Length: 408
Image (cartoon, one colour):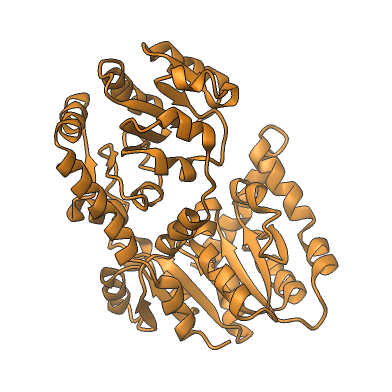
């Protein structure tokens, strides 16, 4: 099985190299891999202890971020090495100020692993959520370097719990401790002999509270909202927009802020063609024209988590595609959350629904009925929003629970 795993890694490496001349993402990844060792050698401070954090992409990084920043504050003598697998994470956070070194993680080939650890020399390692690289974890264990899994979550259909998953089950034994999100994950791990586990919850709750605390005021958005009941549609896709835009067009009692997931000119034009009420794009908004608009289109990145504060209701996109986007960024502002039917893999979505702070819809009819009820019953709207906010605050604290278990 180990041979098959290594063959798979080599084939993936070859595929990325072959795709690099024709595709931007693989090309960026290859360029990043070529400079990893030189970058670490140049930036690593001699004789300083380094804690290594690895995130697949941006979402996983955001989960690990509260722990990185807490360690930085409590133990300033440690240096932070942050690695990414995906360009979508590295390109956004390559200048992250709370990490001393940020780079790509070389592919999990035995030669790469030994060279990376020889150069980086971490004193401990944290792998965020679904990162289970066999050769890295085996070598860390061989070198007696503590390794931890944080914010991980396990389901019965994962390879670890299948009859053919023995190789991957062995990888789990390489961790000194696994900090899991829920009791069910702990029970699944116990069935395969993994008992070094602690249920701490999800560090994303700590992160969204951090984001809320640090959110900057957006004067133009505030002027647009101007006390009106506003629906904020975050990370929306075309199937989502086909549902909430027709409702907005026929309900002048609400305003609409759209922050689409894809900010391309074609998609923005597609949205505009569906609107029947006055709109303005954020990039073209002024104090004068924004007050005349009923719809504000966010045509730039980085504002959504701060924009939710101006909403009375949030619609989270993706539920009619591959899966919903971040619900907690909206819920933290004490507003109810709506999303499409594909939410089953997202524990927080299920729990938000159970708490009464979130609602799944399957059609335009269901969306219209729900929005009409929110408009007609202010107490229902208020109660649902409070349930959403309480869900976030009640589940915060994973970062401190992890820190209590680690020996620094």
